[in-house]
Amino acid sequence: MKIFKDKHTLQKEILKTKGISFVPTMGGLHKGHISLIKKSKKFQFKTLVSIFVNPKQFNKKSDFRSYPRTTKTDLKKLKKLKINYLYIPSFKDIYGFKPKKKVFLDKFSEKLCGRFRRGHFEGVLNVVNRFLEIIKPKYIFLGKKDYQQLYLIKKHIEKRKIKSKIIECETIRENNGVAFSTRNSNLDKNQIKIASNIYYYLRKLKKKIKKNYNFFNLNKIKKDLKDLGVSKIDYLENYNTKNFKKIKRQGKKFNLFIAYYIKNVRLIDNI
Ligand code: AMP
Picture (cartoon, rainbow, N blue to C red):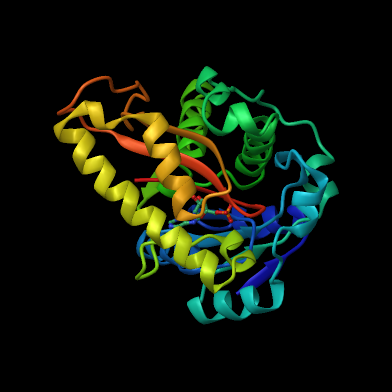
């Protein structure tokens, strides 16, 4: 595994290869990230993983500061996975140049997390646009755990005619149903149990709504979730994951999208 901290030395190296499969991360690596990396390794190109906690996508400085950083164990995990390249850029390496392409921010960025984390998706698209320009990957591996992010990156790539292809990866969960997330390390045992109960509640709810739309009763659902130990709910909405249209009657395909807090830890999921 070759490690790069500077884009020019990285570019010199990867220009020699036939193409790159790219897995962007913010570190704090868990089984969700690892599944993306393993998938990437099955493709014909060399795998490049990046670790960069992007300050521009955090709408609160305190959230950026408390975001878990585990570089030492991340390095061990990546070595074991035998990836080809690791890119750990500095802020200046990423933001010290003017990208050729302008960010395209689809209006769906105003929904869901965009309503509650002002500037978040501008920050995500900004950094992804820069990474795409530096690395020019053939493939980019993204998780459905962050479905809205995946959708917005897809729209940007389409609109700006970027030649990278997105590989969508399934959400990996613990045995108790909780989706792996770097932020889970901020939860104690009891709070993990709450997150698990919420997952099972939502799974059941989805089945009921599919049969009878009247079960999408937000007041009752919010009360149930509070009873299960949720401190605050940013949103609970249903969307068709292909076109991101809202579903208004039973029998249609949809996912439930949720962002909620257990104490001060914010979790997102879609089921
Ligand atoms: P992050 O480090 O949180 O920015 O995530 C890096 C990539 O891993 C993103 O494409 C995420 O969607 C993906 N990811 C995060 N958690 C999971 C998970 N539990 N299952 C699958 N992919 C995930």
